[in-house]
Amino acid sequence: MDSTSISWDIVSVVNTMSKYRSILTSRFLIVIAVFLSVVARILLSVNGGKSLFDSGQDAPSYEAAAIDFYNKGWFSDEIHSLPYFPAGYPAFESLFLRISLENGWAFLVAFQNIFYIVAVIFFMITLSKIFSKIEAYGLGFLLLFIPSFLYSPSENMYETVLASLLIIGFSCGVLLILQQSVRNSWVLIVVGVLAFGLAGFLQVKTAPIGFLTFLIVGLVKSRRIILFAPLVFWGVALNIHRSFIAFGIFSPSTNFGTAIQVSGAKFPCEITDKLTNHTIGQYVQADTDKQIIICAIKYFSSHPLDFIEHIMQQARALYGPMGGSGVPTASTWYHGFDFRRITDFLGTIPKNLYLIENIYSILLNIAIIIGFFISLKKFPIWFTSLAAAPALVISAVHLISDGDARYRLPFLPFQMLFLFVMLGALQRKILLRIKEKRAGHSAGIVST
Image (cartoon, rainbow, N blue to C red; front, side, top):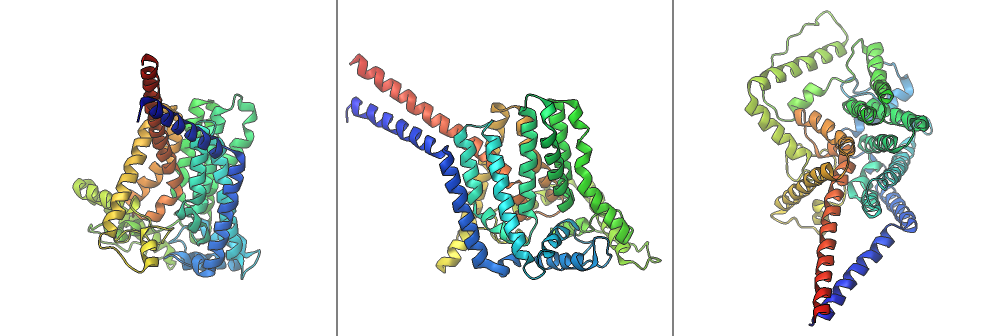
């Protein structure tokens, strides 16, 4: 093969990549992608039905609590599994039971899927102002079809709604900074406060994310925006108010200490009954949970190596494959079209399946971390900070308590963001190499 033919091959590769780039960034393809995602979700929901909705360890408790909220009201002290679980998601679910007590679950499934798609489109539009269009749209296409988010909106779980709210809140934060004038920012501020507040209502652990977002936006854009940061705690305040009216306690839930124990952590803890005069069991639950947390703090502060080992074990479960991959208590939900689902379909499980899954997971996490550091160098630090906040806050909670692959779902879109930053950098390097070779071959032809 002569130099001329090699040069034409390189030109052909570059032209082909440019052609695909224009196709991937066309609005028509976005419409097609959204349509296909909707069709896939309808097929999964119809095929899975109520059994898919009821899958998962906590689903029966959520549904029972939602029915109790429907029948007994927001301030009732007779809600199933409360205050052990937070009240937010079951109360949210009960709103759909008011449409239809028998088929309310179907309306909830429809809402969770539609809301997620809308959030992803908003995310895509926002990122197109920071990323190249091919990176922003490519990430959007991935999130529309990623198996975990095809399945989870049809399940009785808070993670998909939480992910959607965090995406919307993040997008509002980015757009607030990019806007030229603060005067036209009221809509974004209101939507951001509502999104982060509802996220905190569903799961208190996410409340700091909204506060950090408004703090960062305020420091970058206008100090006045920081004044809105405390407003994101409205959802947490509702939960605490309900707990106090119903049970006389200030805890939104009483399961954090139990979660530490469930994770496999071993530490001595002698529970003392300080509330023998109280007849309400919730007082005892809250006090017991508090004592367990204090025991864990005392033990781990004096045994740092045990604490490091505990964090590593939770990290393995939290950041590992969605199917759990043989890690004890690593997944109470079974998401997506993963390796295990494929092998179950084929009727055989390869001997080294778990090893393959874990190696894949490690490589994926390395790529995400590389993307984070590339983002720090390539984009403004405020952007990387906003994108990293959901992962850092939620990870901190579950590395201390219990790691579970499903807890990664709310910040999975932001992990994929950093993955695409890494892939975008890799693509640019490849294109640069191709152009350099093209220029070299062209120079060689001219000299000949």
